[in-house]
Amino acid sequence: MLPPAVFLMGPTASGKTALACALAETFPLALISVDSALVYRGLDIGAAKPDVTVRARHPHALLDLRDPTQSYSAAEFRNDALAAMSTAHAAGRVPLLVGGTGLYFRALEQGLSPLPAADAALRARIAAEAAMLG
Image (cartoon, rainbow, N blue to C red; front, top):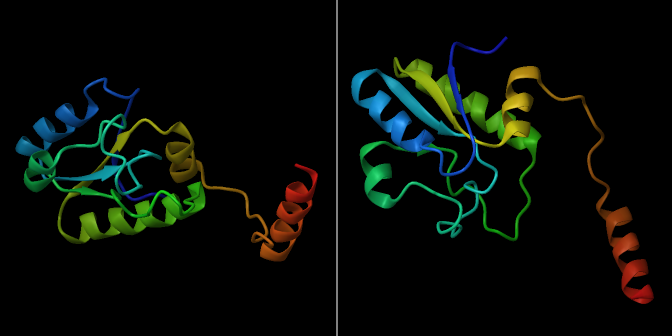
């Protein structure tokens, strides 16, 4: 079961961040990003990442976690979000999960089916075969 939290969902540039920050001015909230693009460092333009000024006043968890060349899965998001939610509760704050990545919201709310780990050797073999063909 998830700890108590508020979900604020919607499409990019629909005003979610502004609303989340306004709510955080009044209520003891901890903002947690639920956006598959915002986990990547350097993707600031076009992804509607809150600017430095906004983040200084209203920190957002789960921003800038990876370089764009690194992968990040819904399962990793779920683990990171649950940890951020736990930290928020320990600090006496209610997690406000804000973003537009529906898969991440579903993964958090409903969980994920267990899957086997990726097989690096198989991926390398397939990549080598594809390179020979193309």
